[in-house]
Image (cartoon, rainbow, N blue to C red; front, side, top):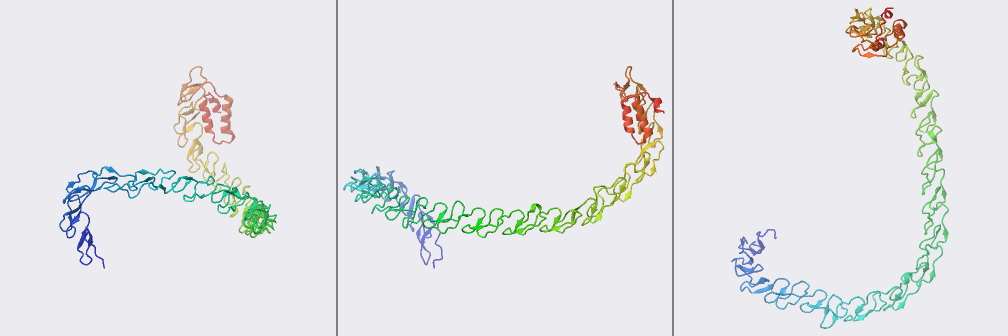
Length: 565
């Protein structure tokens, strides 16, 4: 078996020994391991002597260039040119080849193996110009064209084709290859019958290739049925190819069903292409039932139902509790129900105390005012406000005045001035001079106007006092009131200003700023001042000192005698 590989540079080797018998070009030696001299293409395998030089070189060592630059191959022994470069010929390779097909010609005589189209002669230098000879090829010596120009025929293409030929004719006989419209015969001198379509017929016998519209038969002399559309029929038997809309049959003499749409029915069997709305079946002669509009063409099943109906044929009624009387066409299930109904088909009634109930189990979603429970069977606590109570627990949503607890069952402390916290019962605010969750503790200091709700520490002193326990009098007897933390005046009599009201407003200034002494010409009346003082101390003793002190920052009237009433 040949399963061993020859040496790398060996082109052929012995089948049994593997000894190299032929080296690759440019190689020599026992294993083709040696390289031939430069410019040598093939050298002796054993001696290395050059046998064939590369193109353009000669000598046994291929060291000489061919004397003629146009020479492609010269003799290795004499240097004489043996083959010219492509496209040249002659002793010195200086003559160009003619119009040879390959561009190559014989070195000694320039003869071409074959000529390019339109040329002839030994060197293909003679132009084919015999009469109307085409540009393919010719034989000048015998005046023979191998091809004619269009419209000519004959050995030398001297004859014109018949004028009735469509374009060309046979080179040998002059018979037309094809005829102009309306003609037939070898020379196209016969006229086609009028009934042929576009006046064309078969060139050999004159029979019509096809008939004019509305005709049929071998000679196109039969008339198609008037019901054929568009006035066309099968040439061999006169049967209509197509019918005018509304008819069917081989000769279009049958009427389509009235349920067919405007496009009509199939010519072969009368089946409607499509049905008008409300009909079904192959002939659209079956009526859809209570379908909303249309039904399945094949089985009459509705595509959609009218409101209030369901089922394949829309023969079932939706439940009376379905919202807008609509339900699923496939199973009659409603989605959603009217507020007083429940169940898949909304055919069950909610409890009469429910405003609405669950579609799944009938449990109330919302109760009438004042009720709670799964079926709204329980009454809310009377202390709940009018918004009622939660449906699941009966706990009040909001409590009435002075009530607290989940069910508003507890009463706020009587000491609470603004009610109490709904969940803890703690007072939201105490009367002046009281503190604690239930406002049962008196403020610790006698001069305290209001104290902290949680620890009893004084937050607001009575007018004229200051300090942590409100035991100190204002730092100046001229103060109408003073700051709780510093004791400095927060209100001065009319015409005075400063931390101790020790400064007099400048002349002509009725009242001025307590902090800067800047003059103000809009001072409040004495009656207004007296009303504020009277309201603070005699009406309900609730803390309004913030408004009182702020007002005194705006004006400074000398009403000491009024304040000490």
